[in-house]
Image 1 (cartoon, one colour):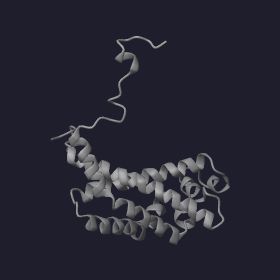
Image 2 (cartoon, helix red, strand yellow; image 1 turned 135 degrees about the horizontal axis):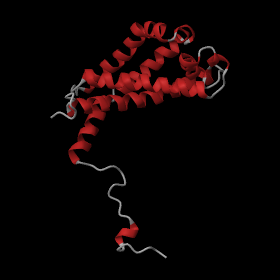
Image 3 (cartoon, helix red, strand yellow; image 1 turned 180 degrees about the horizontal axis):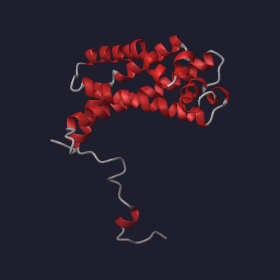
Image 4 (spheres, helix red, strand yellow; image 1 turned 60 degrees about the vertical axis):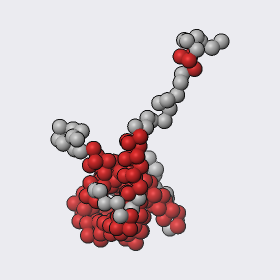
Length: 186
C-alpha cells in the first residue's frame, strides 16, 4: 500500500518514524550528557552546543554566551540525531529481535563515532573536530546508541496505535457548549 506517489509504504513510514522517535529521545539524553559533562568540568552548560553552533556562527561561538549560537547548535544536534535515527529505522527495518537491535544500535552509534565523526566534521566544520572532547563524545554516541536500541518498542507502539485507529489525545472530548444544545453557560 503506497502512501505517497514515490511509493513509501506504510511499513517503511512506521520504521522511519520509529527511528525518528528514538533518535530524538537519544538527542535529548545526549544533550543532558553534554550539560552534565560541562558541569563536571567547570564549563558553561552551553559549551558543546555552542561548539556545534560554530558551524553557523564561526568563532563568535567561542565568545558568545547562551543565545542564538546555542540554539543553532542544539537545532543542528537534533537535526543530525533525528536524521540518523530515521536512517537507522529504515536500515534496520522489520528486525524485532531486541538483543540484535540493541547490539546493532550501539555498534552503529559507536561505529559512527569511530569511523565517521572526524571525516564528517572535517568536511562540515573542522572546529567541532578540533575542540570536541573525544572521550565525552564517545560516551555521548554510546548513550545515543542505547536510545536507538529502543527501536523495536517504538515500532510496536506505532503499529499498535495505527491498528487501533487511536485518535490524538483530546479528540474524543465533548465540548460542554455543544452537549447542551448550543446553550451558553451563565
